[in-house]
Image (cartoon, rainbow, N blue to C red; front, side, top):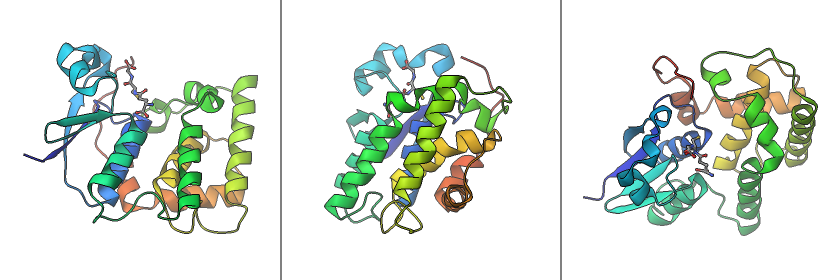
Length: 213
Ligand SMILES: N[C@@H](CCC(=O)N[C@@H](CS)C(=O)NCC(=O)O)C(=O)O
C-alpha cells in the first residue's frame, strides 16, 4: 500500500533520476523503478501527467501520493522517512548550503554544460567537441564554485556527505569523463563521491542501447 515507486527514464541518464536513485539507496529504502519512455513522450500521457502534475521525470509514488521534481522528492524522503539516514545535513546552515548547491546545479548557470556535455556522453558515447565560449565560461564558474565549496579543506561540502555532493560531482563528471581539465583537489573530491556504493550502483547499471531523443 505504501510502496515506493520511482518513475525514471528508459536509459537511466537523467541527472534528476540519479539524485533520487542515490537518495533512496543512501536511505536504504526499497523501491520499484518504472520506466517512462521520454523518447516516446510517455511523460505527456494523460495518466502520467495527471499523477506527476508537471509531466516530468523523475516522479516518486508513495502509496497514492505522487510528487515530481528531484529536489522536492529528496525533501519528501527526508520528511517521510525521518528514521532513515539523512541525505541533507541536519544543521540548518549546512542544509541551506546543500540546498543552494542543488538549486544552483539546476540553474541557467550550468545550462551550457548540460547541453554540451549531455549525460549521454557520460553513459554512452564520449564527446571530443570543444566547449563553446558559453560552455567554457560555465565550466570555469563550475570549477570556481566547487573550489569555494571545498575551500574549508574538508572531504565534502558539509561536515558529512550529502546529496548535494552527489549532484555536484555528477555535474563535474560531465567535464571529467569527457577529458576536461579539473584541478586535482576537485578531481579527488569527485572520485571520492563516485566511490560511494549508491553512486556506483547508478553508474554501473545495465543500460539498453541508446536512442537519441
Ligand atoms: N527540475 C526537474 C527537471 C526534470 C527534467 O528536466 N526531467 C527531464 C528528463 S532529465 C524530462 O522529464 N524531460 C521531458 C520533458 O520535460 O518533457 C527535476 O529536478 O526533477
